[in-house]
Length: 151
Image 1: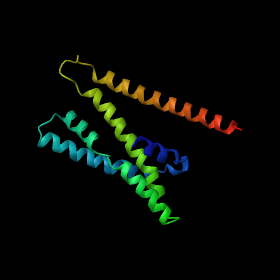
Image 2: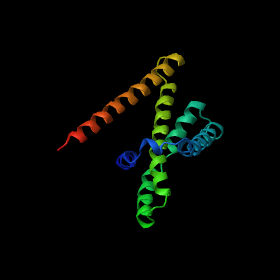
Image 3: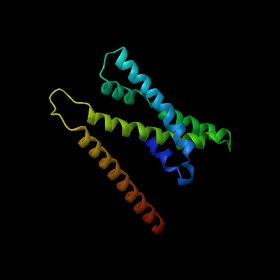
Image 4: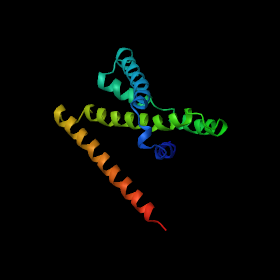
């Protein structure tokens, strides 16, 4: 699964990241996440945070199956825009859900855990996301620089 997403993610360029791609990647998965969370709260009697965590665990599972099929589709129908679209939104969707999962896990509190301020949790998660983006950009820039210097 991870290698499939990395392969698809490496094919994304900045010009591919149009606003409609984000809507296509995030709107359906948000609806799916909220529907699963509502089921968890209303039927399974989970707390809202537990329902949302359940939603993040169960949604966004098809990327490992969809991307290879789109690769096959792209080879069969050269020039069709659908494979490129899927290669762009699939990693965005998975990254979004994994980020939401990480944030929600901070808000869920196991039985023996001390209470932490929600403001502190939000700030810690924002800092973690910004640090991840900065390190990713630094590693990407360093990789690009090293590849261009390769003989």
